[in-house]
Image 1 (cartoon, rainbow, N blue to C red):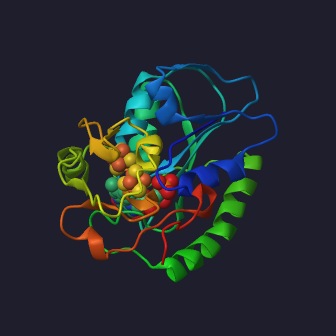
Image 2 (cartoon, rainbow, N blue to C red):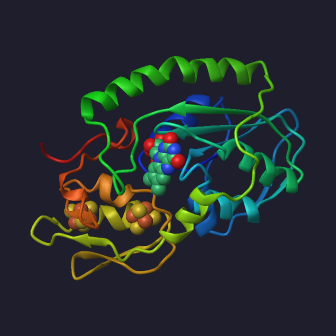
Length: 253
Ligand SMILES: Cc1cc2nc3c(=O)[nH]c(=O)nc-3n(C[C@H](O)[C@H](O)[C@H](O)COP(=O)(O)O)c2cc1C
Ligand code: SF4
Ligand code: SF4
């Protein structure tokens, strides 16, 4: 069974590459919304977690889901953490979190992929994103081979404790900085549909950010087909990124 979370497609793509015939793929955001927390991993089945690193830590959606899940499991457990540059101590934080639930994480690997964090700084352009995706392929293949061999690999970075970056993340889960440019919006509702935390509601044809549970996945802003969504002052001039498995960079050039 593979649990995944993905805002712009990188982690979904990686999770799909690991999927074995008949294996179940569970979207942690959907499970959290539906309050589906009971899982049984069959004997011999692997248990996988695939998600992006946020602020060298776990996305709030992943953190909350794992805290609530109930799992009967003594299976080989692995995590694949997608990152734009460096997962920092995220692997060890996950290890500690699962340990408390009685789940022993045997293998953790990072996959460097295109960065989607354009809320905060300029990210790579489309050409560089394509190069990053190409460079990730041999890493993904290596991980797949490691998992087939049930290799053990622990994460050495960090001490598993809450750090200053995680505290910074906790400060920015509000949505006040999001806005829509009404003249660009085509009222397609994709932002509402793609939001994993039900934070967006269409009101009179335009998105409104209605609660403070935003996990900062960037799905709304990166996946808007018209680049009609902005965040604070800097995003107007910044690149957008969407993995091809989520339709790629869909906005018009
Ligand atoms: C809020 C936020 C925080 C991020 N923090 C980090 C980070 O600490 N280190 C890093 O390497 N990448 C960071 N990234 C980049 C993503 O982890 C990376 O692009 C990831 O592959 C996106 O996965 P997804 O397409 O499945 O959503 C961050 C992205 C976002 C949106
Ligand atoms: S995805 Fe973009 S164009 Fe579509 S409704 Fe949302 S803001 Fe408007
Ligand atoms: S509001 Fe946007 S950034 Fe926040 S969780 Fe929803 S889609 Fe992600």
